Length: 110
Image 1 (cartoon, rainbow, N blue to C red):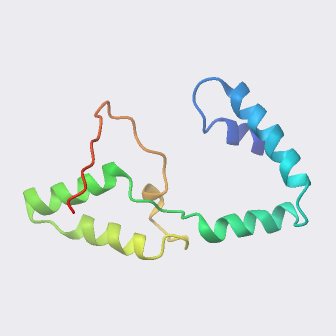
Image 2: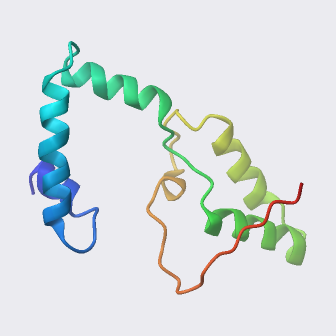
Image 3: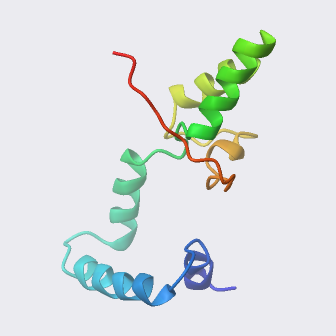
């Protein structure tokens, strides 16, 4: 599978929209004074590999509250301390969310 095909597989539904966006993005990148590699490196420097998805946070909180098990919380926290650095064995925190059918509602406690 080519890199483009792998990329397109990340998107559900009509891939024509993604292909159109890719064409526009490539045209935009061609106007840059930086190489594609430099643009990639700049993006990687500010876009985290690991993000606190609702499911991960919910699992960590549930384990702590219901089972007095703080290990999931501590693991999630340790990953999020350095979200730009690849961490062996922590791939689950960079994976796409798993569809559960459950709609998450988040609330700010401040």
